[in-house]
Amino acid sequence: MKSINVLYVIIFLAIGILSVSFATQGNSYYALGSLSSDGSSESFDKMMSVLMHKRCVNCHPAGDIPLQGEDSHLHNFNISRGKDDHGLSGYQCGTCHQKENNNYSGVPGAPEWALAPLEMAWEGKTRVEIATQMMDPTRNGNRSHDEILKHLTEHKLVLWAWDPGVDAEGTPREKPPVPKMEYIAAVKQWIADGAIIPEN
Ligand code: HEC
Ligand code: HEC
Image 1: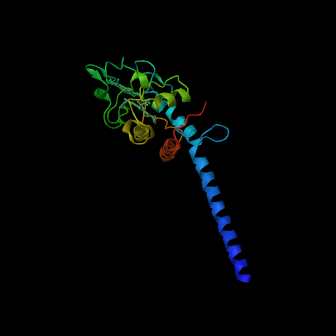
Image 2: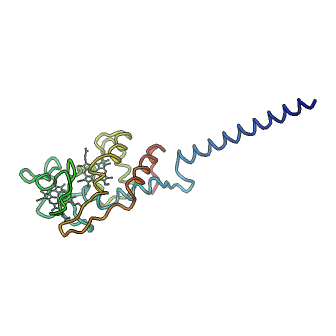
């Protein structure tokens, strides 16, 4: 009789432990997989605070002229995107912009320096508009989620924003508001969660 009671206790405990572990798994799945109950997403907030920063937007302008500096004024020297976003013939971006910052002249630099094409313009748009077009293959250079993830976390022009050098006056350019590793983690989290764009 006694041993049967012990058996019941053991079965009871086992069921208890199993259901607790299922429940917590369920919770962490929900926490990962969707927006918070108020419709917000911390990883989206962090990522977008970087994308909306002038270090990105200066190169993703709505017009044909790159923007410069903390006040995003039009680029000096009559620079224009030209036919291929690399500048006018004979006056290409690479004439001045090298693969690295030149902190003597104040010319910023990174490999493949060019203007983002017009369909990738971010200037003047809301964060929801930017995120929507960034995930739209007809407007993002036909990139999949994985390719956008790679571009956002590995591309030299993107990462330049955390090593932006100094301007022509020798003043250090402002970095994006979120540290680089924290930004990379937020992008990965947001895409792993299904790249859900909140309503605003
Ligand atoms: C005649 C040389 C020259 C050419 C050609 C040139 N740039 Fe620049 N660019 C500069 C200089 C100098 C600065 C730095 C100005 C400063 O910050 O004081 C600069 C700054 C910039 C910045 C500002 C970065 C920031 O966030 O403040 C961007 C963006 C930029 N250039 C993009 C381009 C693009 C794209 C092209 C080609 C379409 C181009 N530039 C062609 C000289 C040039
Ligand atoms: C020096 C100019 C420059 C700077 C600075 C720059 N970009 Fe771009 N960006 C480009 C160019 C050029 C392309 C198009 C490249 C291509 O399609 O291969 C591009 C394309 C992109 C794309 C893919 C297309 C899209 O819009 O969905 C993303 C994402 C992107 N940039 C993110 C960023 C972020 C984030 C920053 C700032 C942290 C940034 N860029 C800063 C020039 C720049």
